Image (cartoon, rainbow, N blue to C red; front, side, top):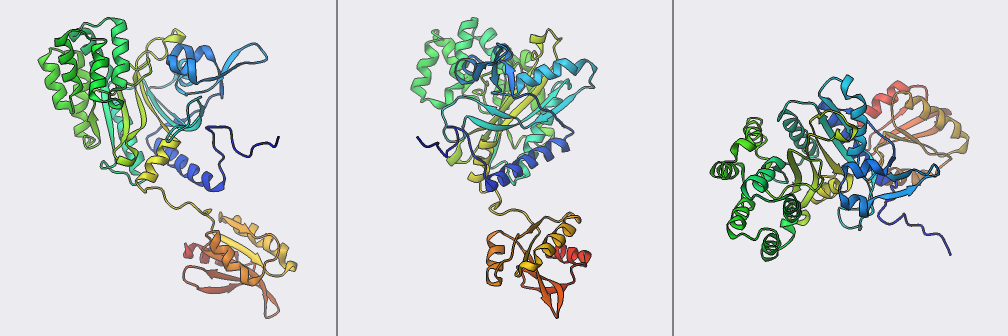
Length: 437
């Protein structure tokens, strides 16, 4: 049986054109994070499964991790998410590290999921986290970073929203207003998480299976109908819950002061599935009807380091996958044409006796930080420009003999301008190429 040429299901091969897109996305991630003062970190591809059991959801452990027993009889997993590794690393250094801690990473992750649009088994994820910042300020920093990151591609508030809720609000509604027990609360969390995926009748039945009292049912439905922060404030005031949720109400005022309110929308159905979230939770939502979905999510956590017997250290972070980001950019036609490599010059020769001069000139120009492709071996003259255009080159250098002397013909394919230089005039050649950009 012949070996398959396809990658493992749910994984991708990155040919040069795909790598150009990936590098473009990664470069924007790094540039934006570092502009906000975040530093890069990374961790191992393998972690012990116990780490994920301590801080990840049941679905992840039971159905999605790639796990095995290694030769040292340790039960390990290929990392399905970065936050548990982050928690382990922060727990080991936070006592001697200046606060706030501002870290970012772009890890390779694997989950055993059903491949579909926006979801594969192997992906890269832009993770940004802050630990130890004053309340509300870290949230504002993260929201600012998200909006500036997507704006760097040309995205506007017409294209995406940041849907926000607070687990403290949800807990106050569940525990103080509805008087639900722990099991009911857990089940209702799951229902809220599915609220936008089912029709009204199905949703009502799912709620009634948990909340049997009609008055409580109506209160909860009213809560789910809230669409903005002003309505939320009125709801909390009417039900004497404002004091329990004052941090979110204060945050909304600061959001307006920073002109972030055009992006940020209150949504009671945002609860996020992972148990370690304790405060603000949010999702970045694509408004385009052809890609109407969350493309990223995150939230605030207060007890992330508890499994290491460390004192509480508040933090907030988010994860944005490369697949959903690319879908968003392509849907809104924000992805530039990266079909060709970004090179400055193609160097060719039509006579094989100039093969070595080709490499000598190419190396000299590379020392000037130019990106030069040396065509190895001779090429027929009538094929030069077709080759250059097919590869996206704007300038071609042709090494040839002219008046019995070795010469370099430079041709600008944009304006068809031609000039001749001696091979050792690398500074003049460099200037010609820079002017042609």
